[in-house]
Length: 360
Image (cartoon, rainbow, N blue to C red; front, side, top):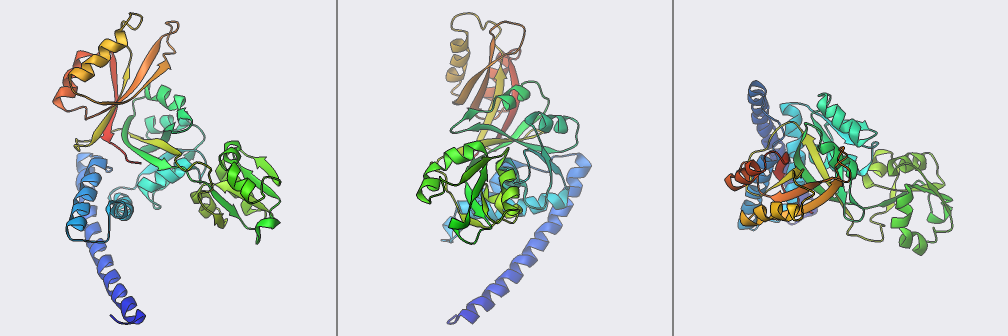
């Protein structure tokens, strides 16, 4: 191929082959959906998707291909999302308005074709799942800067829904506006924290002296900026795209290591993937005794089970200043050594879910 025209012609030929192969894959997927429907099996299987991505990554690496793990994951997550919609269209409930970071997290796993339900509170997401008005829910569990989301932890402790996946998403802010020139901007909309997180950018571009208008969400900021040619929004990329506001600058936050961990919730149990994490809620019977928590945690050490997180929360029971503990550890609930430990503390432990551990 010596010319640009020849390269483009070859790309067109390959694209035709890709579409044909995808259609053939989706025919098989449709049959998979029929089988799962007959057996009432879960459509979303994170452990199966991870196995596919890992296998394809090894094939690409061994053949010297240009696609690395991140590229393969980006392509195939969207293919998986399209496939799930062919198997059985499902509704996904999430916290916040369209264009929120939780919406962005949900769409990163379930794709653009899914049926999304925007809800105003984390509790509403849980209630929607419990009432079977949606199959999946997406809620934040912790942020690298602001810590855990207490409401999510509290609701996990009393709900029947389970954690079926986790994902970590870097939180990047976009500066979006319909103004033709940056000096035409007279007002900026964002959530109150958004201004603080992007202070250096605003100062560097002389935007610290224009009017800053706090609103309830970054999505709302994008909506207002879409209607005002002299305004801008500090918002998520998906909000700017959703509401048709051109992004002038991306990644404008002062600190670039800010990330949020999200849980995907549903009503089924994952199989073992080999790279799992489990979350439990622990209410110690003898919590007031000295060393009660230490003795409990010693059992994890003795079983060679690695903890990744422990968080205490007020119990909200009628026991004064009692606490319960949210614990993450590596492994799956069905592994023998973990089963043995859980059974030993069966009256103190509530299993919240086992799922493929996410990567940041």
